[in-house]
Length: 339
Image 1: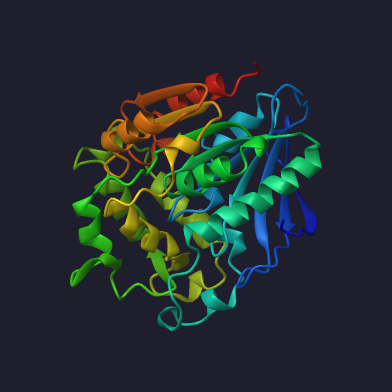
Image 2: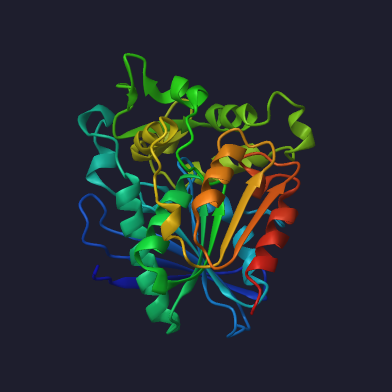
């Protein structure tokens, strides 16, 4: 079991009904001197509601779940129901950036922060939360690449997970389109050689990635003006090297891309038969990364005591910060309600 040390960095919460904290978890893992864990909690906790832990995807860290604009914080929404909500920056992301690997030139190291490492980080956060709240289990929500680490943790330590949510799950369905973006043309089973330990993400990259999932539709139908820019600005502000880049950019580990090459070649990243706790599977109906085939494969094999599947329309891969996000929020509320 990982040994943890932590410190609290209290924030001033913009909502007087919520309290915010930031925790540093000291984890003795190579290249990761600390992990940043954000917390929002209701001023009045309902003891029937376990703490919730959110696991981010391959590009955007924990800030994706807590954008500084009213109505755009999934953390605040869930916390307002009377619970504590946590979001972890896996090693190399957001405020867990400090690392010799991430400070060195990207070509000098292999892709950093694979899913197996991220699952270890997520387990460290779960251990901390269980000890802090003196509860037996947490509710766990994984998004995109985060569904891999969340599912692995839920399978390996089911006693620590009360309920599991897999939002935009990736289940080993072949995806030639994605392989064309990130795989080595000479060997599609490997990550393209230009991807070293990490990559730089610009504002234009954020917009391009999001637009690619909107199937060439009018983006204003799905996305409020300025939200993509706000997402970039929020993440770039966490990277001390962002301002000296031209154009400004933040660093993002490439370990997830190495994982996705395997996943999009048809390699299942986890065994759904080992998912035994109540399970909610969610995806935006227009998501081109997590497909209907991913959900079908997952539901055909999962052995959970309760399984609920929802497709939310309209919605892309980034439904959690789109105009229709409240339907996602409300679906989570319903599944995570006290029993």
